[in-house]
Picture 1 (cartoon, one colour):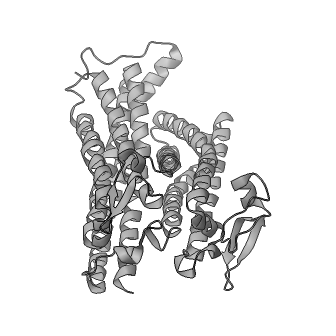
Picture 2 (tube, one colour; picture 1 turned 60 degrees about the vertical axis):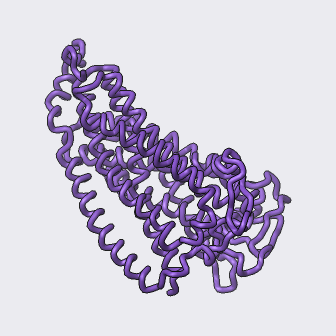
Picture 3 (cartoon, rainbow, N blue to C red; picture 1 turned 180 degrees about the horizontal axis):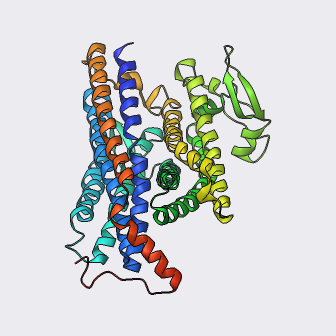
Length: 460
């Protein structure tokens, strides 16, 4: 393997590893906000402890996410120096905003959540929870602005062989940023809901922290159902934008060779040796999806030279696996909500195991989506402007990339084991300090007693 392919593998490995933690932090961050809101309204110590529990899980994930994110950005200047020179004028603004606005906002107020519970008012603490979560959303926004510009460049001109920013807003609001951002955030919320549901499922299986688990389970499966049902509509919006601005990528998703009407929509299949697809398809489905008519013409990959076509098999399979998993997630959340309405969710051991299994599957789905997105625009690192082979650093050898890839793999393995032990350790311990309080408050509620508010001045 040459340096170009190795550099691509290393960057894909770094991004994929980093994106194991981003969805968890964004999803659990929402749970922090909801739990802290509950405590802010009720003043009940059990709600306070629930918020503290989710803050611990968020912090453990946030820390390793930051570390792996920095490594990813450093790769721009090492393995991808030519690319960095070409897009530096464009990327400077969103990456600076991500660091100076989003990251500092998130990390500053995370400090309040970790150390300020007894030093600030309850209202300020609650607002800080919102600002931490908003910071994580803004961080994702600025990174996706940069990535979306690579997919659908706008607001620039070429000067002396470099892309120069001519309009910040045109570049930031490039054609694909809207659906790409919403699609990504909703995907992270699905993962976050599965993480929360899995924690609750674990406590149901162990018959511990039952009141805490009931609350977390209900919140996660309801939100999960809403966002997973919304995902197909968001995905359709995204597909329309891809078909308009990156028609070859859209064709690669379904392995459409020649430009044609009545283009099929494959449910599943395999790209055979002849380059055709063997599988089950909805006749004229793609034409109907993109143009609401079977006569809608879909551009095929054969409309560009072979050197400009993305890898067929990898693009097709990653795209369809993402969609299949998305359908599965909606079904799982729907069944979980139905079981809750029937009063059977708490004792449905099989559903608890399904919810736990969906955590790694949701992370797989997100990374399959990224794979389809990035592989589907090859051979371009910036769509239609710069080829991937032209962006790699000319002085970096294959041996050097092999060495760093091996070191990254070793360090990342150690970090993952450390994070997993801390994360699972927090879950195993649980909100131990209030387990008796939860049950006593539940009993008080059943008797009709007023909830015990926080002591005067608490949280100040």
